[in-house]
Image (cartoon, rainbow over all chains, first blue to last red; front, side):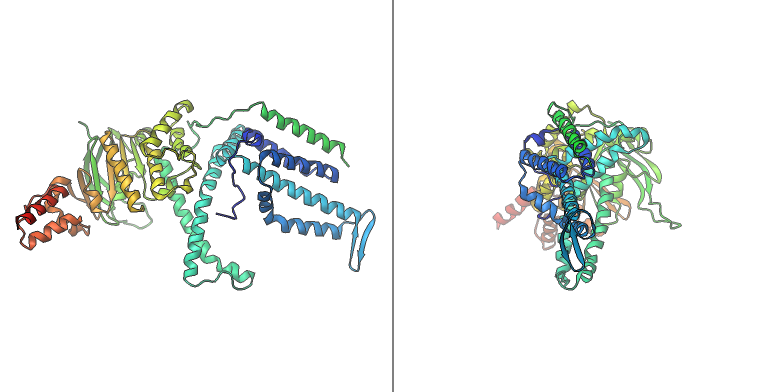
Amino acid sequence: MNGFIVGMYLPGDSFVHQLDPRAKLGFAFIFMFMVFFADRLLACAIFLAFVLVAIHIAKVPYRLFFTALKPIIFIILLSSLLHLWMTKGGEMILAFPGITIYEEGIRQAGIISIRLLLLVAIASLLTFTTSPVDLTDGMESLLSPLRKIGVPAHELALMMSIALRFIPTLWEETEKIRKAQMARGIDFEEGHILKRLKKHLPILIPLFISAFRRAEDLALAMEARCYRGSEGRTKWRQLHYTRRDLWLLLILILLGMVLLIFRH
Amino acid sequence: MEPIIQFEHVWFRYQVDEPDPPWVLKDIRLNIDPGEYVSIVGNNGSGKSTLARLANGLLLPTKGRVMISGMETSSEQDIWQIRRTVGMVFQNPENQIVATSVEDDIAFGLENIGVPPLQMEEKIKNAVKAVGLEGFEHHEPHTLSGGQKQRLAIAGVIVLEPDVIIFDESTSMLDPVGRKTILEIMQSLNRRGKTIIHITHSAEEAFMADRMIVMHQGECKLDEATGRLYQEAMRLKEWELDVPLEIELWDRLRQKGWPLPDKIINKEELVSEIWRLLSRT
């Protein structure tokens, strides 16, 4: 089960763990929004410092964040390089034939890297410290006012919960099919990237077929257990805001002020 | 006593594009009384799973009618009450679990029928205890073994307090240990007054019930108390079914000329008969 960092939950009882999932979701959403307005290096640095403190309070090992970052390191590098290369302005720092690096370029590269880092870090922090059940319940509760305009809040939350429930199952199945195909002589390591991708087709097709079969079985089992959508449904877990959650509001206001003060 | 499940001349076929699809069930007449322990056996395509799905309104009969405690399954307003009366445990334990933890999954059914949240705790606890999953309440489903998953599926059904529980080949994907626990749970549920319907193709498991129904090509071929069925059990081969080992043994010994009685009620009786013969020689 290694390699599954995205969406992983680390049980714990830290301050961050005990926050109401709705408060955390709302906070993360607004935080991500604000990150896009942080266009000064100093503001970015303050945001980063805040996230580092939050990670510390949540008692989540830092190395997990590096693992979570791995898939997007390439994107961070690429966008930084593009900025270094393309952005002109400020003093000239380095000049090679074909590429000139300006001060502004370095600044922009730094800002974009920190922004991407912040996005991944806050999203990971949210999933590391919030159990899937709380996360989906929180989402359902936050979206429920939108039900009036036709947003299927309950269905979306259930979909997410079922997806989370079946990730390990499908992952195990993928491994099983992979081994079965290897036993039939497929070498997944050999050849260039396109060839290797093509070799994964014999994994994907059986996986899809079985996923559809599972979906059918599950729908039947849910129906047999009296499932009929959100109509007349109660929730076992009730969410309660506490005084702790006010801290998130305060932090949001502070971060907002940081943005205003260091505005361009 | 009014039967809890009644099939009245039920015919069923799936709606497909073909002009004349084959009948999956042909003129099924069946009464099951409250508290009975019934097994339904048949090979693949015999219609036994279809029969189960008709019993809680997951499928509706093409002709005839199915009555559950006096309610007809085709009635839209009664269907939820029918599904609360007849619970169903399916074959693949993995594909019945909805939620990301054991207790949340058990709560799923309660949430569906609108039980007030404060009453759920107690019910969930009882269901967990009934299937022996204490200590696993917070576990994620994928960390459970096959047998434990199936026990969770049973807990999810019994928490709704159904009168009838149908096990649709629920033991066929489990290892021997898992299978044994599920069979024990069935028996203990039956002792506590639940009507149990066990659909299986294992003749050995089928003989654990009090009454056995044999399905073959959509027809009900045999409906008999298992105690009375021992002497004619060799007929199971007519419908391509296995015969339990002890009955096969009894039959072959008799053919070899052993003076065994021609009426056997259960396995224990056969064993003691053989012992008696052996100690005589």
